[in-house]
Amino acid sequence: MPAAFTATTGEAHWEPLLRARAIENQCYAIASAQGGLHENGRKTHGQSMIVDPWGRILAQCDKGEGIALAEIDPNLTQSVRKRLPALAHRVLS
Image (cartoon, rainbow, N blue to C red; front, side):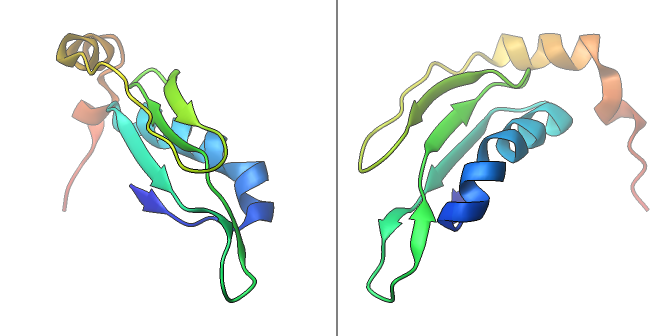
């Protein structure tokens, strides 16, 4: 998920929203986020991160350029989906 949250909203909401997306979709969330001061004067938050299906942060880049690496375990995704079968309750119309 690419993102460019403003510095203000990113500080307050970026991490909890990303963790919530991973939990509610029972998947790994891998989010690259622009950060810093842009030519137009806009400040973005940054904090790229990788979150597992249980909402745990596996890796992140707090500020500036960087690389976040984490091991993806498909067995964890299956385990979480068995323990919390929320996806099976979705109705598509």
